[in-house]
Image (cartoon, rainbow, N blue to C red; front, side):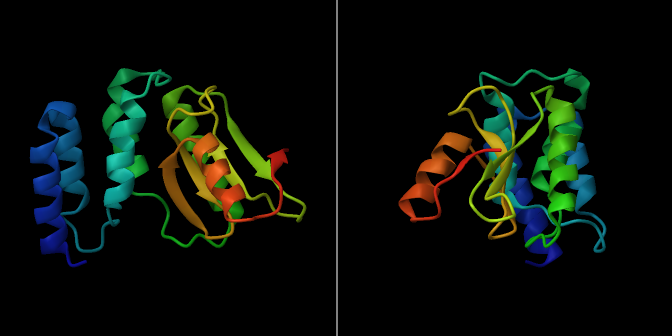
Length: 160
């Protein structure tokens, strides 16, 4: 997606969700895409960031960090991520801003976990999850992701 189209899409997104953004977040989002060399906004993750901050388990360590959290979630590391350590550091940063309960892995029978996610303390509250097999991030509850993974006939998953 080129930068001009990305700017238009972000503008449309912010207008559609204006009641959910404060001015600092809007300015930070718009500034993030002004440079052609800047990071790309993942619009599905941006929408997920809104679900995350409105969730019942959201408890910010510092509410002034909301713009930083939205930017962090909307601009994850370039995907697919080939290094699980990069993914885990990203999730730990999200966890620190949200004040949740750490990063947890869903393990399978292989040497790598099936997924890593930020533990909200609630099975079906939205969280940021890293799907190891695909190398991608998404905002979804870990319970819903687990049901999806089991329906896809992946190896049986368990907590690690």
